[in-house]
Image (cartoon, rainbow, N blue to C red; front, side):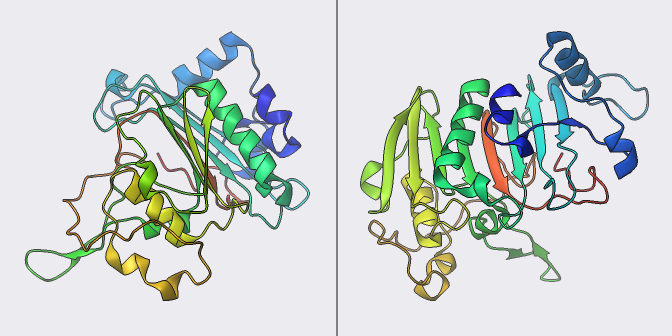
Length: 282
């Protein structure tokens, strides 16, 4: 918590959510004390609805809010899931940031890099990404009609999402194909992994380049997402992939993300001012 708070006051004042804004603001602040953190993680365990027994394979979770609700203190959310062993229980960390307009400093490339590095240092994930909801949606498989033709099955995001910053640790089974990375990408070693950055605007990386990073990680990219008209002015990317048939859908375990490995994700999305619990992805 201290490392994040040192970067910007918006990334401090974490507390549990509540049934209302008033209730949430009354919650005690999260501290760096070991006992406090353990108690909060224990309280976040999933339980059976019939007998309240702990579901051990789902691990531990905590969902915290920074107490913000307006431009004077923009809202942010930090969600942590650890020690899960179930195939549908992810181990990950998600930091949801305020809108760029209310917290522009957080979206400067230098600051964004420091935020990402702080989370990587703290949680040592297999992968990490700085992205947003719009970019994630562009990486989903296309919707497909049901067998009876009466409806549609919504497309899912398979594997690691891509964004402005893309980190893969050396231990992760997914690797970057350096020959397929966009021409404008910056590659650097960060800790025990590789970080790929796309330009100098964390809030608006070129869609074409983001999708090209997905290709470089070995994922199929829906061809309808790569039309030039959807990404005018994008920097030149590597050779385009041929048309492919996306693989079968995988049920998401956390906000549409279907990869079971430990991950860290930063999202530039709004957070509801009236109810800190209203936009959880668990």
